[in-house]
Image (cartoon, rainbow, N blue to C red; front, top):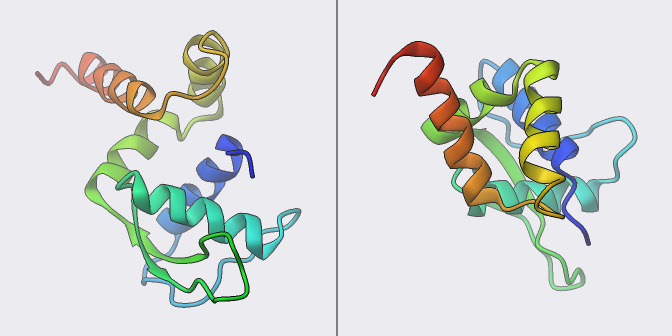
Length: 120
């Protein structure tokens, strides 16, 4: 399964909107549970969310249930929350690389936030 960074952003935005941790499979219009569960796994591996492993023995793909954002998840989301910022990141980082190099994009976004706020 290919990574869908738009879906990853949607998941992060959804988790930010919740005041309490989630303990059930996330449901999003236009996406099946398998794809959402796999992307929650990827986000957990990246350290952006806390999630529970709900993978069963019949499914070959990891299936994670998201609980909440981590500190890094909040920081990352702050850099891509605005649709204009997200489109700019996709055009300047994702498309030129011919794919998504997550660690580079994460550092780029955090650098952008520091530059905007003057924090070093």
